[in-house]
Image 1 (cartoon, rainbow, N blue to C red):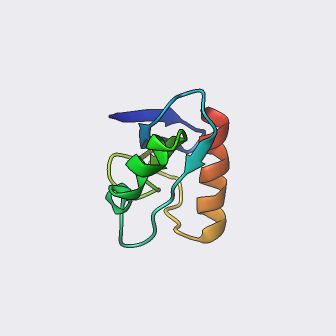
Image 2 (image 1 turned 30 degrees about the vertical axis):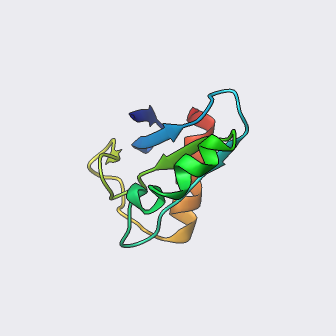
Image 3 (image 1 turned 90 degrees about the vertical axis):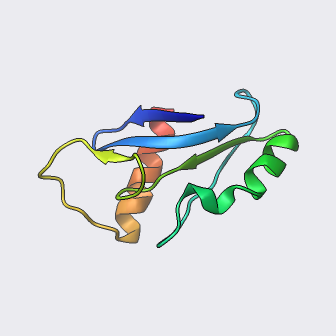
Length: 90
């Protein structure tokens, strides 16, 4: 199932598996991949009892910028900022 959370910069879409109260594992894809990179491993982690969260990073899939004037950067610092904002929004 696809869920979304809003951060100050993005509406981040993500897939979630496993018990909601379990310890979380966040899986991040890289270029040029997307959340489907984890189609085989995410169910195994969920079956092991983890809450697995797999967000589409900025510029991918249904994740969207909230403002048209936000710089489109794929720099590691921007992605790290997005990850912290994603965790805070959860």
